Length: 204
Ligand SMILES: [Zn+2]
Image 1 (cartoon, rainbow, N blue to C red):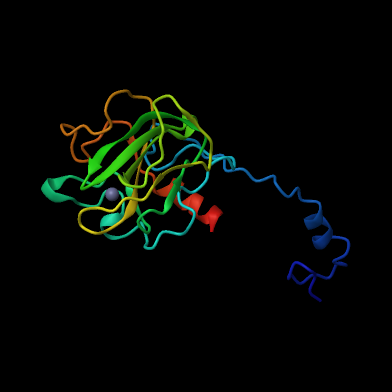
Image 2: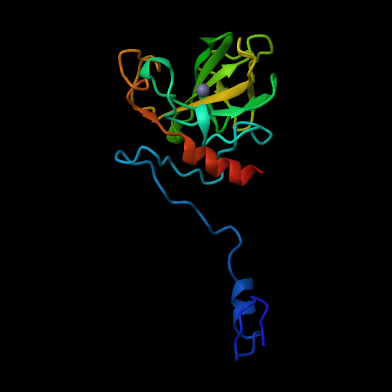
């Protein structure tokens, strides 16, 4: 006979399987992976207080092609972000509570970027945001998780996306460091792929 868990057992399922399942605390799971100096690809656990930066699924996979972290760029530079394709002017939300480090400034091909310190999560550069549809934020401003902080920009090339860069946040100074190949970024740059994967899974 099959019990409620789908297994086959000779013991009365009312006594075992099903009953134990029922007593499992519903919100007990926690991802305890921690940021580690030796693992570029793991970021702080989110404990449920981090959200995906877009309100909808990206329009294309961020693991492949030029959208992925580490993909090649002109002159041997490597892509320092994951690109989340989205329609022009799609709202972008803060992934967690944080503090604005740099309000919007010119970034790339007709788009802006802004930088937010998200504490344990790290520093995020929200790149390729719109220059025409904007949110007014100032340096030092506190933002709440989920708050709309920008809108997706339109590049001169005609494409639109959120270019998402993640830094550990234990360094200071400009995020773009042309003299630091191959990413040309500050040395605490991290690969955001796993974080974004996790947030995407949770969100949609
Ligand atoms: Zn990009």
